[in-house]
Length: 296
Image 1 (cartoon, rainbow, N blue to C red):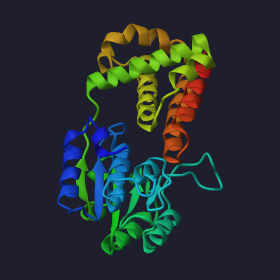
Image 2 (cartoon, one colour; image 1 turned 135 degrees about the horizontal axis):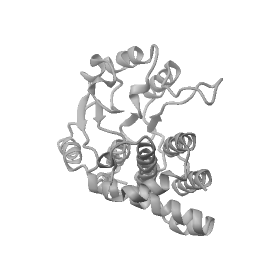
Image 3 (cartoon, rainbow, N blue to C red; image 1 turned 135 degrees about the vertical axis):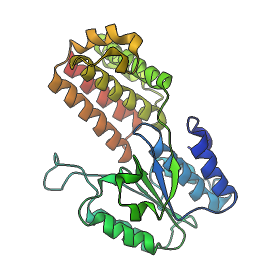
Image 4 (spheres, helix red, strand yellow; image 1 turned 45 degrees about the vertical axis):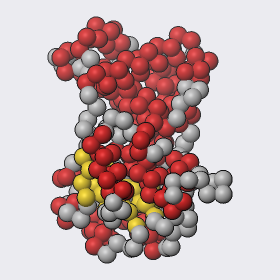
């Protein structure tokens, strides 16, 4: 996927396109915005532009750099995401000092295919312990032809000294109508999975790509959040789609609080699976099956 496929963040895309056109790409970017606004998807699309640039945007010897980037198999793209401790798979997810040291090691190597390398830190606010300071030293003396992208919720998510060395690209939250459409589709998908089982689910997800998978996962998360709000007695106006409050109330009655907490965790794990390059269709199928089973 390239930047022209990112349709709901025109200002961010235009900012990145200007940098590419003028060949004035910064060594570090901070993509700032709420979860679900397309920050990581845009980071991967920008990486595709940067790493295909060496071939003039054209496939080289039958090997398309864009496809490799999208599949997270390009040797010059390195993605770091929060992980639990090795000793406790259910522990708190974080970006620890070991991950930063490995990033430094990768950055010290010459690019394998393109003239640049791209390093993406997803949920960079989860750097813990010595990680932010180590990363700051890395940003102060970045290797040549290296582009770093931090995916963050806001400027205060990491130390100001880190942000000050990045060019900021802002992402707006999804509009109310778009979010409501995501929730409605998630509810429909869940209903079909309950009523018709795996065959209906597999048919719906047959052509799901990464961008579509992200939207479905976000929709399921927003649906679970709305159900939690209904169960807590929150005013209907605060739901993603107040017009569906009666349907939400009926759905909320099929869940317990613990089941909803577990469902939201399943959505988060699905997002992590996409970062780890699990097949989008498989990721969505597993997530929906888990949600449908818990609320059956």
